[in-house]
Length: 185
Length: 257
Ligand SMILES: Nc1ncnc2c1ncn2[C@@H]1O[C@H](COP(=O)(O)OP(=O)(O)OP(=O)(O)O)[C@@H](O)[C@H]1O
Ligand SMILES: [Mg+2]
Image 1: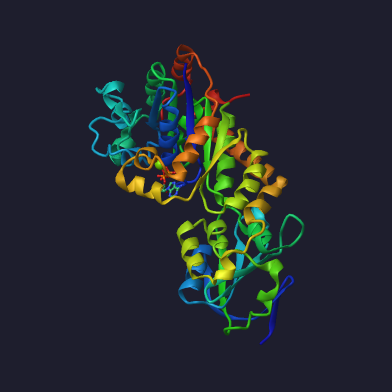
Image 2: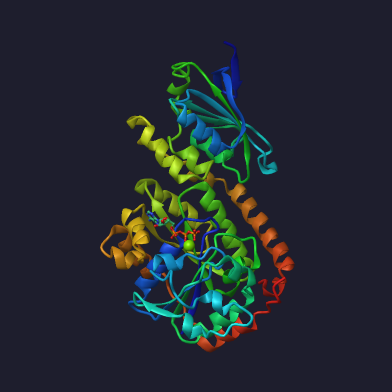
């Protein structure tokens, strides 16, 4: 088996089982087939510069994340989830690996994520997150530490960009709706 | 006195209607509170209040040839004056959203606090109008990145119309420890304080199923207590009702396209 190095997360190359699905579709498929393997996630949005990330699974449940982009270059774990949680669709490919073949990768704590976090942050699906948590091994669910949301909130530049974009959009729309007379200073 | 507050979120299903009614009931101990379902495209206040069969609703008031009076659409329930909105799609299409301004002006003349349960969307004039008309907003968030992103966006839309954030509610919170850090970080970006964090709550779901506001259905629940704390932290501002009503009326809102 050849290696596919995604940044510092070295994964054996898996068998493609799903292509061109959204994140929700990939997470759903992984859970329903008890997948051990990984998803390559490519945000379609320009804001993300198309930098891909990877999310690994053990028995259908997300374990580790890595993204080639982040507030400080590349990013791991919940920081990687925050980097991947961009608005708009993503293109995802899902790969399967033999059971146990990610055990070594999954021993690196800096990459791990809470089991329900990818569904919540990337797919915005609370029900799927809950179902995922129910399937996760106990020690995975109480993985404490900082969350992807905290990582997001630390990224002042990114938040300023969201605000600026929203302001521009609001003003453009106000003109379209004839509400520009209502705009504040 | 009167202050109009839009309860907004940007993203659907975060608990705007639950929160609007809970805040309203908690504020009703001290104030005269009117709650309007201003989410005219996806109205659901009626399902939270047992008013699904209400005869006259906001929808009737937004028709150009409306023969109903505002009074006809006001229901005294749970210590609140409720103005539900019907869910007929054809009535929504025929509605002139700008008539909301006149309805709100009339309601403002006769209440202390006017809560506008607002749309999750930002893509239409009718969805944005509550943000335009309100004095301030209460932003309802769930502790996730998509929800915070949308909340920031709503805040910016509202600010464009000179409507500042009165406070933020974190709803459906599961992780007590992390939320304090999140709330503190979030306060740097939102114009108002974190009013409360509301726990994920079976009582909230049961209340919705029973068609009752949370504070009527489960007043002793943790979530209800959290909403009462939130209301306590919300400093209602005195507006002169005449001036507020005039502001709503004079809002330069054109004919809908
Ligand atoms: N704290 C909570 N714990 C558990 N469930 C909750 C909580 N708050 C709200 N809910 C449930 O979530 C669902 C959506 O709530 P609600 O209708 O208040 O949201 P909304 O933001 O008004 O939605 P919409 O955008 O569709 O108008 C309801 O079933 C409600 O009972
Ligand atoms: Mg609602």
